[in-house]
Amino acid sequence: MNDEQVQGGSLPVAVVTGAGGGIGAAVARRLAHDGFHVCLVDIAAEQVGAVAEGIRANGGSAQSAVVDLRDEDQVATLVAGLQRLDAVVNNAGIFDERAFMDLTAEDFRRHYELNLIAVFRLSRHAVTRLKSGGKIVNIASRAYLGARNHAHYVASKAAVVGLTRAMALELMPQGILVNAIAPGLVDTPLLRALTPERRAAQLALQPTGRAARPEDIANAVAFLAAPETDFITGQILMVDGGKSLGGASGI
Ligand SMILES: NC(=O)c1ccc[n+]([C@@H]2O[C@H](COP(=O)([O-])OP(=O)(O)OC[C@H]3O[C@@H](n4cnc5c(N)ncnc54)[C@H](O)[C@@H]3O)[C@@H](O)[C@H]2O)c1
Image: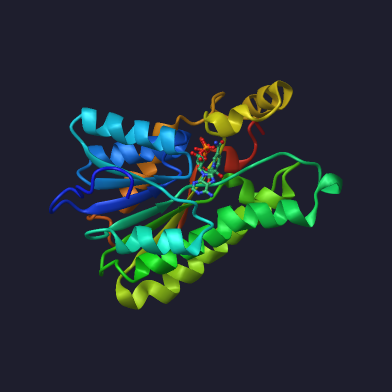
């Protein structure tokens, strides 16, 4: 733990990874607003500390932890140090653009290491602490359906979808509910990493004419993580403004 050790007393505890980034910060703020004590996890110390500080300044309960989710020991220490655990949001992820013929095996390994294996790693530790009714929400991507110029990312997110469904089945006897959200284009630094031309082209493809706000994703996470949501598991919720329906330009 890098912040104060305060863990919100009797509040339910949610861990949010990648909470220093665009979507993760919005999710952490929303869960704190909904009454969770939020443990914000990120490798970027300054960013995650600032988001946690902002939550506390607004009356929420939050701590931050600087953790490299690719490191087994760091993840084990994180989970063991929590007073209790009620929800995990596996949100940290990386993304870059590369044409299929320019991709290397190393590009795949890098994306799998964080986007897939880190989800498995934290979830596996978390399951030792989650009780019946505990929630795991994985942030996949609409891109798992297929997208040009990032086959490595697409494959890693399709794997997260498979992992989510397999975990939901296997953790069902323990009463742990596992779902995923598949965001479409979201207005975050990840989107801004696209070239201006690609960014404009992507926005033009959105049926609603806009990218999602990080808060649109946080809203869906809040629903799936809420204590009263207790009969939904193994689902992939598209939060993409209808993009996955196709037919954006009419009949
Ligand atoms: N932005 C989009 O359009 C979009 C669309 C669909 C899905 N997603 C998914 O949403 C998630 C969040 O995306 P974002 O746009 O907020 O990205 P972001 O880059 O703003 O945030 C990602 C965060 O993950 C952290 N991180 C990276 N490596 C880490 C590591 N090894 N250990 C711990 N933390 C690490 C980064 O420091 C960063 O704060 C990702 O899984 C992404 O694939 C994003």
